[in-house]
Length: 239
Image 1 (cartoon, helix red, strand yellow):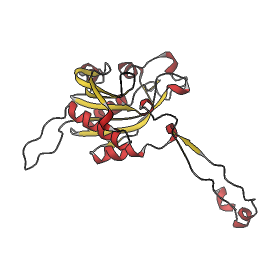
Image 2 (cartoon, rainbow, N blue to C red):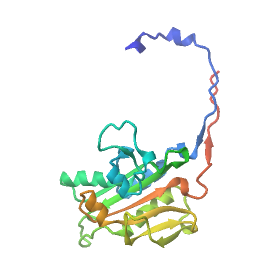
Image 3 (cartoon, helix red, strand yellow):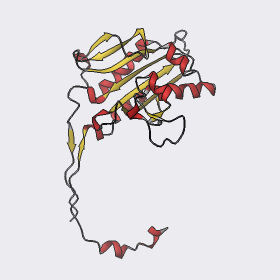
Image 4 (spheres, rainbow, N blue to C red):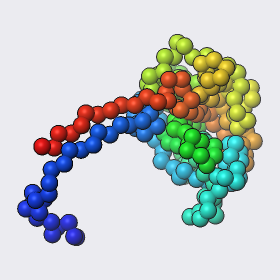
């Protein structure tokens, strides 16, 4: 280990330098608040690849030529992910194959709609499958539904500082959600930043995952007031 050869006297001889002030932009900030909020709602955090199979990417609005990897590490990981949901759905499928039926998985990470810097977005997503709550003395359980996904999305937004009283919830969501059991969270018609609901049965069948599954996805960059916020730390005095 080369580091064991470094003596304290060598370090003392290095000139002291003033550390530069570092500014963290909104997209660089660690999104700990949504993680904590989702953990409080019983989610387990998953860390998945940022790329996936072309067939899965196309199910969630991706698959564009500019999102192809030039040198993929696997023939099943060829495209940058357009959403966090396909990776979470696939993780649910793997856990089901191991005998787990009641699942709640979430992830905070980046997704890509193109190859430009502005096409990279920071997101938070979660999926649930099985029973909404364990059997208890108050009565039996019930399966998860779109209202659970709605509550999860609103909880994650609230912990991220979004004033929930000002958001609007309207019917309709992207094609990978069930058309009659999904919705969009927005602040005006031009500021749509979250979707929730039951995942489309056709999408689940294509991924060989038995449903129903419910889920949500938040695009943090699309939240009004989210862009351009920065947090500067004072310069370190190294004298």
